[in-house]
Length: 318
Image 1 (tube, one colour):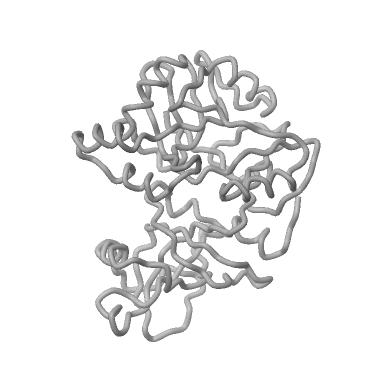
Image 2 (cartoon, rainbow, N blue to C red; image 1 turned 90 degrees about the vertical axis):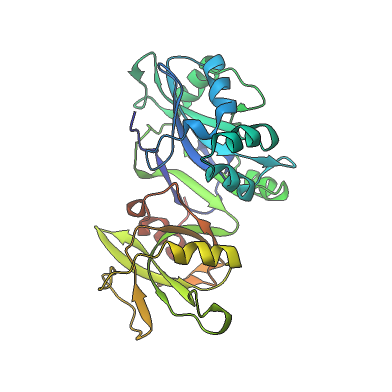
């Protein structure tokens, strides 16, 4: 299959008759190919079909000869629970996968359709693709079609936050599907800013962090170069510290085009992605109070570009 999912830029709440608004699901992106047999693919183009046997079977029964785009999520009290999803994401043992499919079932929240009966419909406008999706997919408790609302993005954003949802997605009704592109036609709007960044080095730890690290040096890509943005030193559990340091691959030179000046830095191969939460992005593009959230094993380092930061730094609104 090999279809890279379309990506969104970050922005602020706005109202528009030319856009629709959906819940922003805190999960793992998935392209589902149901043209012959069910094949599930994550952002890194890895086959993850075996991890979710419960709704791979459900998709085969409720759709045929199409390719869908959506988000995998585990729901707790009606809200996506990323920590619960992480348990599912890291399992490879078949017995444990089968057990978790019963005790910690995942849902597939579908928001787009890319191909039907062997023909691509990615060039058709989103409004048309949404209608086709409703015709082609039958919902159940494991396979859900994402609801959307018109015009009043500001009110919908406020309502989503009250429900405990992390934010909303705004999508232009006339937009085509652009595989692998971070497009201004899709805007992610969140209360707490979440950014995916690349680890390029670390600062040695002190005290009880001496055997791990004091902070991770993070950056994003621009014109093929890795640009240093900020470091993050908080938000790690003891288990996460242990797991992250085991994955370090030291390299002799800085991977950053604008290396931070510090004698205490040790450089790393820039192939690991982390998600951090920040209070604000300054006008200069610096991150205010970054906190580590989790590793992003479903995302390639090259996908982490500075495009996700610039609109926030400039205060851009749609």
